[in-house]
Image (cartoon, rainbow, N blue to C red; front, side, top):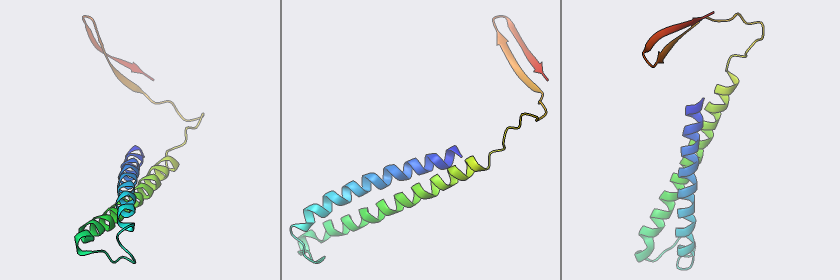
Length: 105
């Protein structure tokens, strides 16, 4: 569950950063390129903008998948029933000059 949300967060960051870079590059190219036809000196910039757009799209897909996995994990958590039988617990105890185990039922 947490892993899904973590992956989704990474996807969000990647998608947002790459999207912002795409908008920045595209804005600079809009002034010199018409109908995706750029002078030879700007073709590398156009290629970079397209690559960044694809990275941004992939980041948002990762966001969607990660969020889906996280939500699925939340929905599949076992419900806590008030009538459920209590479980035994074994807890290590470490204190000043003491080491032991605490058992509870």
